[in-house]
Image (spheres, rainbow, N blue to C red):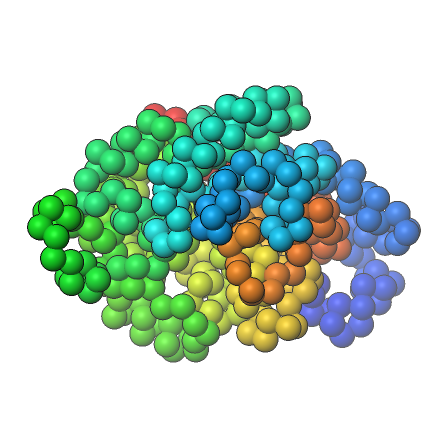
Length: 396
């Protein structure tokens, strides 16, 4: 069987034309040579329009609050952001896990209130996604479904599971167990206020050691798995509560030991909302092949992000083709049903991205087509896989 990885190697040696001229193409390339190049982008746009677009991770609410703006400013075009409602409606951006708290830069309660208020003020344009069916309802009514999500939950629940219950009651449907934090909190140790210390007494962190964030060798990655301190007892409790409430657990930013701890203990599929493939870019933020296989065994899905430094060790060399290579690698080793897209729009600061902003999303569809993905596969990648994971979490 010719895999997409085999295909990439042959393209590098002789180009697509050489492959098509010299042999019968594999099944996923049957239509590649029959469509004239000038029609290619138009076909991509047509396929893109038929897709459910479910972005696994978008930071625009929390980033706006961090900059001193109201979340509702995302209803108007602003060139300083990668996301706003006008561009979402133009490109058929149906839904995203919109981050209302990431443990560092903006108050989750303020961001949540402003997000809910914005949705209430624009019922013809937005819909609060409380269950998977709301995604389809929004898509069918030309609205954007807002799935509220938090990464780095520890800061906001203060060791109290009931706070997570309250966040769920108010609409949170995806939670990342960490934003890289873990282990002792030296800042807390310096706090003298007895009321605050009493409130924070007991377990707080959900993993026992921090997550590294840098390029590394495979040997360093293996050592990190051996030495990291994984899921804490409190982390196990919060994971169990996520499963009970139907909150999707996001494993982005988690350390390697805690990653496998979660997959051994969870009763529901998980996601890794914005990541990439370690074998193609040796960065701690990317998933190893063993992690990808374990995620697939769990029934989960991973979103490949647009951040250049996670796609290529020299970020200046990352392109749309590089993004497609990462997605094709996932499809090759575990199946396309475990691949998705998490843009990380408005959460990357000054880091470069291979897709500058929302209006260019159809270029991703074009890149996937050029790698031989069929329309049905592209539809899975763009949204159906994440929707399936949420459905399986939502179902008792």
